[in-house]
Amino acid sequence: MLALNFSEGRAFRVTARGYVGVTCREVFTPDQGAPTYMLRVLDVQRGGETAQHQHPYEHEVFVLEGRGEVWVESGTVALEPGMAVMTMPGERHQFCNKGEGVFRFICTIPNGGVRCAGEEIKTHP
Image 1 (cartoon, rainbow, N blue to C red):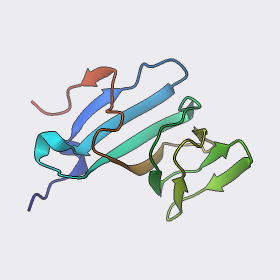
Image 2: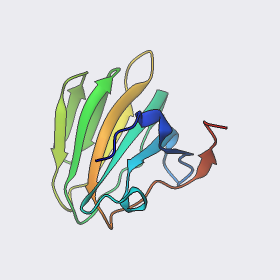
Image 3: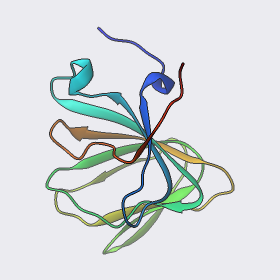
C-alpha cells in the first residue's frame, strides 16, 4: 500500500498550447508502482482552461473545489464540488474555470496515457 498527501506528487505548470493557468500534480503513476491507472490532481486558476483535446481512452474526473465547466462537442455542463465526469474515448473535451478561485479536480487515466508535462514546480525541499 502507498498513502500520501496529494501535495507530495510531482507538480508541473502545463505549458502545452491551449493550456492557460493549469497545474498538474501526478500523485500515483507507474513511477510509484501503480500497475493500471494514473491519478492526478489538476488546478485550473481563475480564467484558466485546458486545451480542447481528445485521447483514445476514457477520462474520469471528480471535482474537489471551485466552479467550472466541461465542454464537449454536444454542449457544456457546469461543474461544482462533488460532481463526476467521464468523457468517452475519442470525445473532444475541455475544462474551464468559471469561478472566482481555483478549480481543482482529480483526474484518472490508464497507464500509458498522456503524462503531465511542462515546467516542473519544486514544492518540497
